[in-house]
Image 1 (cartoon, rainbow, N blue to C red):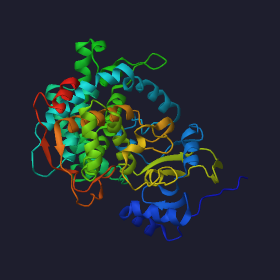
Image 2 (image 1 turned 30 degrees about the vertical axis):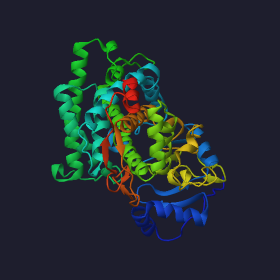
Image 3 (image 1 turned 120 degrees about the vertical axis):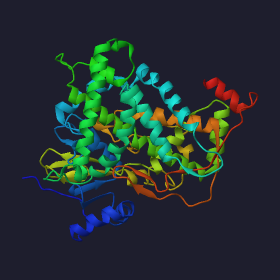
Image 4 (image 1 turned 90 degrees about the vertical axis):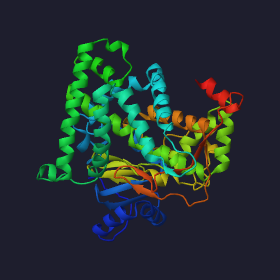
Length: 447
């Protein structure tokens, strides 16, 4: 018989551990790590008893393990996104679906979305007020939703308008319900889950209309949106995706590319206002036509302000040896993104916001994990990074962002994502439109 060996952890009663995890999530794991080291066992409010990792070697082993050894954590977002979602699928089914969805997020297909991103950003930025403080998170939410509806759903007209109204409410409620148990009784529209299911039925009807319209009009090869690509895709046996699975996967892509991306952009505003030297360097780089520091800034924001706390897996093999530990079948293992990103052995002076640390080197994908890792790394990571790059490029090119000496905004949990508590406050002024100015010349070149 295999001798199990779990990391040590707090011995206080589990209700107290769960309450502490809910009320002091970041501070709690930092204190536990300080006492027990880079791996510890805790009781969590969502997953129950779980092992928390922040050692990069053990995280690498976990991410590289096959689906027969470790797989999807339960419960997960599949409860709100649907059984056909990438979050809900496991093993061979997950691999089959992932193989089908990889092509839209690479190469020529990915590049085709940049114009959509730039146009959505320009439309929203045209509404920004000058000279007074405002929260940027709602604005970033509208930008990323617009991009998703056009580039992923291929929505236009009445369907676009209805989804733009419906999905923000659905995402907000779903983010909250994703971390709560599913009730056994359905109280209909009088309960959060009942309202959620009503909105889901409306969403399914809209997507069915989009699919019907696309199939009726034909010419799917001429379309760039991901819905059209899904309708053309075929599994190895030649069968197409079911419409229900298409709807679930569209929601998955919405969830992965909307709220989290918008939240990171709001954090970018929050960080840059408190680091005027970085802001000036970005402005100078943009005027010179560069991009290295801009891309590094996005990486550093994701390191210092990750919007998701953990990445989870479940052990499928009995007595699995993971680094220093031997874990039982069914054990939940959580990678603490915050602890990993704040490790001074990996990132010297980790509390300092310093994009230059990534200006000449790509991050190690087992040290920097805002998109997860292994076979479950976010499919839309490149899409999200392009979104953020386009938005930040437009911001630096078109606006002067006022610095501030105000304290940093504290994280506020929106259920799934941790957003800046005041919404990423900004004060902006439009840059000169003089054709002779360096900024105008750079903008003309970008067009």
